[in-house]
View 1 (cartoon, one colour):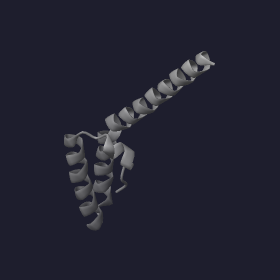
View 2: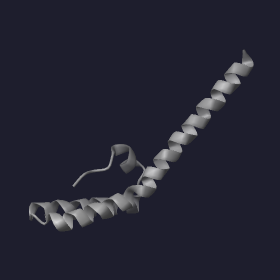
View 3: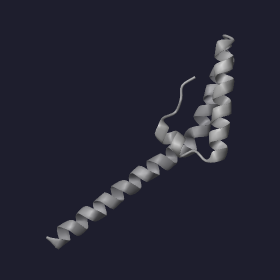
Length: 79
């Protein structure tokens, strides 16, 4: 099972994080049982689950870019 990034996990809601952890446990169990066909299905569910957090991370990045642009604009106006 592949984990999502720490940044993405940090943006999961409590409910999403609980579900993520439970799915990871199930996926690891299935891998230990050599049921990679089922583990693949669980991994796809995890990938689907983290998509909203990935979008939240992207939005934070876009907001940071807008804030930086605004700061630089104001700074150049003061000069």
